[in-house]
Image (cartoon, rainbow over all chains, first blue to last red; front, side, top):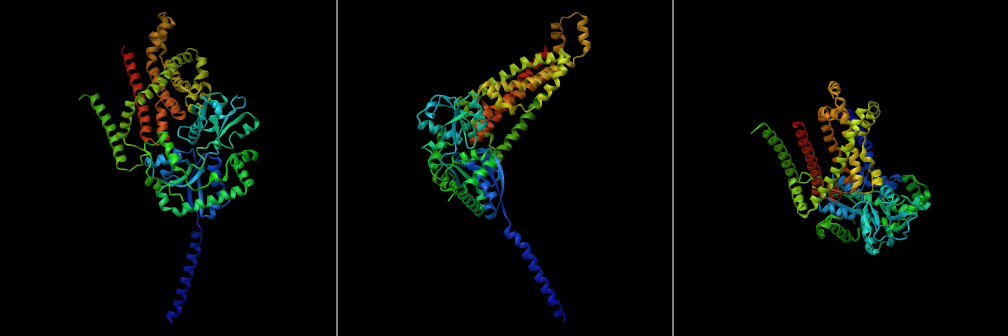
Length: 324
Length: 249
């Protein structure tokens, strides 16, 4: 008699408990994992657009990722932010910088290439300048951002390629470079799309050299994406999911150039025509995430710039570069 | 051991304890060496750079920039301070403005200075001059305002010339404030010079710190910081000696 009364109550209780568990478990299965991403130089096409568009178009969400974006000034700052654990992934950092940081004690792991070659950089002269090509600038002052940066590397290699000896001047970011150029402190200054392409269009400045002309860095992973060793060890699947979403986004960007240009124009608040001109600087293969290629070039560069005293061993490089 | 000796011992003991703690933290691996490094490694890097002549050259460059900016700031700031006091309507018009400028972050204007003075020591000295001149002028003005008017009346009653009043009444009475202004000025000049050196990578020990930061040479970064502290101590010490000599005479 008692069992007859109690049994249905137990069954109802168990059914309710199971239902409640299922209902509360459902959102957990669909819950997004937060990924804190440090992106250098907001607005630059290769650094910003893949992750930005992946977020806007829902590719990151499809991969189970909720992106938290931090903007950084790049290079050493990005490495320190990731090493300190303030960000999970650092994007678009000079390969030689990451190698240097690794050899000097930063436990980082390179998860993919970010930029192959240097098609994004270009050098400008004033509209009334007598100089037509980089070759004409032998012995003249040419600006780059700061020692050890990709602009410094490209300029040094360009000087070697064209057999010229310019006076290399560290001028800082594109706005500083442009100011130095227009006030005649330097004869040529650097920029990256879409910065100052409107001035080129108006004839106020002229492009005398594009990074794409540089033979030495073709096929070199000049910038890489990286994470801390600790984060990578604990979140390999999340890292893979992020890279997969970014690869999908890059495919989408080049399949849908008009929409990509619209996003690029929106981020930089420039006219679509200008964004389109900037987009043309970036062939799809330059944004390939793999392979991380010709690391020996970056090692040699770091040695040449005296950023490191000795080259990393094969074992050290294997530990550093975990990219597929 | 005298009182001064005990004070010095306490000061150096604290510094030694701090350095020992830093050394231990780094050696035990409690902190990543791209953020913090051991004082012994900084000392070793300093020794290497002294032998190669790099560090003395950087020190001389920064010393020259700070010295030139300080000389200019004192040469302009002291007469400006006097003029603010001597012509009260001028003082009322510009004192507040100068105080407001003193609180402004001048460092943000470095690109303009680079445009005007070029990418060289000229821009660094000009920024240092502005940063140092304002506190020197303001303190000189305040010091002169605080001079007891009775002294001036006595001087006038004794038929002293303006030059004699300045020499024998105003300067001795306002000297403590003026020297405070000079000390403040040199501090701001040092901060400005090293900050601009760091930002534009031109010049002395600020450039060393900048390269250290961007190339992950943490020893160089802290060597730059230690160099700035040493220079600050040197200038403050020299001003202190000048002050005591002035007052003892």
